[in-house]
Length: 628
Ligand code: WT7
Image (tube, rainbow, N blue to C red):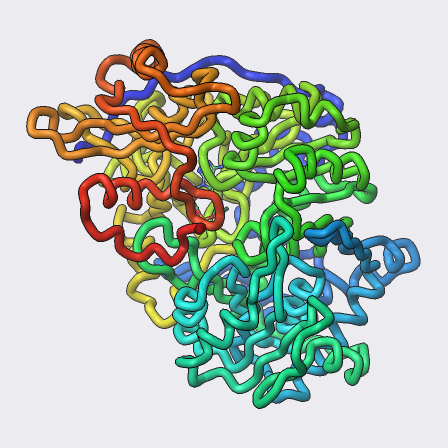
């Protein structure tokens, strides 16, 4: 593979209303970034001072590559910042969590109520013998108790490992055993699109071979669960029996806060380890500044807390800012494709954060659904997880945001813990480009040797300085951690390909392993997919490389069509022509196959490797993350 390749840059951009800039927490990107560069430690120290610590740090940062320590010797508990700090007259009765269940049930917990539930449950866990450093697996539906369980672990210094409730028994067992979990917190069932998910049965199957687990705490979600036997404990009883007010465990800044297994769209899952101090500062800062959170905001990140997006931007970051967090067990197109927009209207959501895969799904169903609802409460829109192709950006901006709301396309990873690249509120937005490194982050696009590549030339996306919320290791496999830092000299290699424009805006092209070399040209799957999706008939596209005797690789595309469009030879020809016009002849797929749906990870990423394996008739490898 050659290191670099040329990419066409589109100059189109949108200028948000300048009133955003006047009131933003980061009103002037350039000066904030200069301030950071002039004194990186001072920059982070100022942010850390906004939070509550038991004891201050000796040093802000210690960097002995590839290991970083942040806020050395400081003592804290993140839950004091997410809960206790908000128990003031003005905030105690403010809703912390507003929940909607799959069948329309609803519940609201104020900061005071959340504090009481968390501290009760923390006392309950402690009474069961769970303590500082013990690993606790949380495998739950998206109910407030899931967040209560996470925060209760953090309260007593237990390390949580949340496993998304959509995973099966094999994936769950692997994660329990890798972490050596002492307890598991689950529910009898979850609900999804009106269907029952038998979580407890899946847990029992996983526990058949999980010797480390001593206690199983079960939330009786259905109201008709059989009472837990053996090592089982009833969630509600435990809560009831325990007194509120558990003192927060004094944690060192570098003590682990949680382990989270990466979505593993490539290879076997890794247990990413995040620590207390740096993670708290990084997620607090980015929640506040990137989404520009203000006192009266209603904040809705549609991710499940089972993903890093949920850890950082449903739970820890938003609660640290004291905002009102909306969560729902519901899915965006159930009972109909207006479900999310109804919720935005009913709850007055002002900050809305979702994934491109959801946006493309909404596009597919048409604008009539969002148009049924009043979306005027929206102020800021966010995207995460995959490149937000220009087509989807435009739709999101115009149809959902009413050409009024800035869009923050946030690039980051499970490993980074917090947003790394985006366009700060008030700055010009370029569709297709995530933007620039947030103040506090040094990112660049480089060749294999670590030399920056010129604008318009693709290369590897890297981070050049440590940041507070960076992963500290891979649980039980530090060697794997080191490969992030020793692939390209002096850099953290994200594994993504990207390109910069003359202004330093970064476009993320996709994973480096999704690059296809056709007749000596490097082509990113994301580019071809974006070109296909910009055709009016195409809802979603996935592109793979297929060995070709002549060209080395040929491009094969899988497309799903918008409602009302049907496949035909004319359409195939039109799509090929369209890609030719957009990207040039070298990028035209030699084969286009129509599909009803594409294989995706449970977090919504297209699994090209599964398509490729199927195409080549080989074993796809680990597919535990594949949605049904
Ligand atoms: C990978 C990380 C961290 C949030 C959820 C996914 C891709 C993430 C963007 C974006 C283009 C993006 C990258 C990255 N990605 N955000 N805004 N634009 N690509 O976390 O499962 O750890 O995946 O998601 O390829 O490396 P994750």
